[in-house]
Amino acid sequence: MKKEEIPQDESNLSKSNVKELCYATDENGNYTTGLSTGWEAKTIALESSINTINERIEEAKENIKSGKASPIVYFMELHRMDWPTLADYVGLWQWRVKRHVKPSVFKKLNNKILQKYADAFQISVDELINYKGA
Amino acid sequence: MNTNFTHHQSAHCENGVASNLLKFNGIDISEPMVFGIGSGLFFFYLPLLKVNQAPAISYRPMPGFIFNKAAKRLGITVKRIKFSSPEKAQIALENNLKNNIPTGLQVGVYNLTYFPDEYRFHFNAHNLVVYGKTDNTFLISDPVMENVTTLTEAELEKVRFAKGTLSPKGQMYYPTHLPSEINWESAIKKGIKNTCSDMLAPVPIVGVAAMRYLAKSIRKWPKSKGVKVANHYLAQMIRMQEEIGTGGGGFRFIYAAFLQEAAIILKNDKLKELSFEMTQIGDLWRDFALNASRVCKNRSNVEDVYNTLADQLLHLANLEEKFFKELKKAI
Image 1 (tube, rainbow over the protein chains, first blue to last red):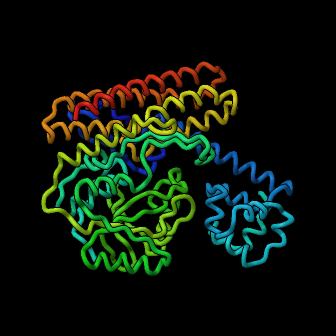
Image 2: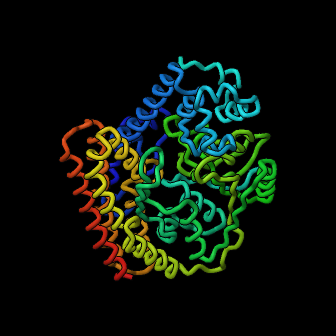
Image 3: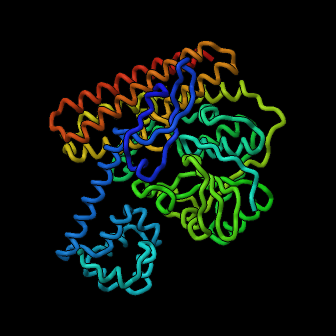
């Protein structure tokens, strides 16, 4: 990549005024560095990942509305977590966390466990149990 | 408390922290030099291991490897400490600052408040330097940012004790012993030899063999996983290759910059030639990422686009196989 070819496309970085460093060659073929505001290829890839996450959030909402899942899945997707990450944050085995997704099991959870989830999602227990998928 | 630390922006966090900490300690070493001596160039593909609901693809070795290898080859001792208690972790960090020791930290990205929202994922192997503290605010040099920034005590505790894969457990690190003289030639040669044997390793999940393995998988994805999942996989692959940190082209340009510096130190013109060649290979990686992103965007149903991508990747694998064989001979 030549220095003048460092892409300066609009991106999520440029919105926040963040530029990243790239390595490129100058007119004599020697390496130097330059800043990039973003690159089309990366923006597409990042958007695609964000879209996938948003779809998962919507799906979680639907499942909660229809009584198929507990609010845990929604907040897990909202915080871009997967099962191992959430299990580590609440300090429980993955199989237990997965069980808590069943609305019937979730209803019976004691406050101590609910508090762990609330802490992991940085919300209150009330917000957690009262989430209805809206 | 403020140490006399100078922030330099870098492409990749780990090399950047290493280079900045060593510069503070009087060793003038560039980011590409840390990367090359620490054998940072790598390729890894393990479809069974899933990261963000996509197969694990990596263009770099495990976090910490680059700095550890570079330090060892340069004769530098690096102390690494993990903590179980956040209070103790903070006290240890503050003691370092009092003793004028800017300190590297492993942190999770998700709660880094100064990152744009879109970049905040549960990735726990980010690196930054804490170089001072005023009141209850830590002064932060994050090497991928243009300028220095700050985090409050609570914010820093959150990122140091992020949970999940590769959780940092408050890890901090800093050089404790520096040699009086550094044997650059030997360190560079060791770094290059290590990279050549990694990239040419006779295992299917590492180096050029892994690129071929991935090419084979890309052909199958649209049929076995469906176009939607296939495109999600491609998006993740592009991000691993081009996202903040690689300096472009899956680290190939940083490596070319390293070879150029190495050519001068080793007085070896062949390395300069190979640096040009690596730049061209890096450009082809960029084309590959651009084409893959177009496949993602158009959501094309034609099976051929995946085959075209796979062919491109195979071509890259062939070029790199030849390249690393030549590089091995050149030193």
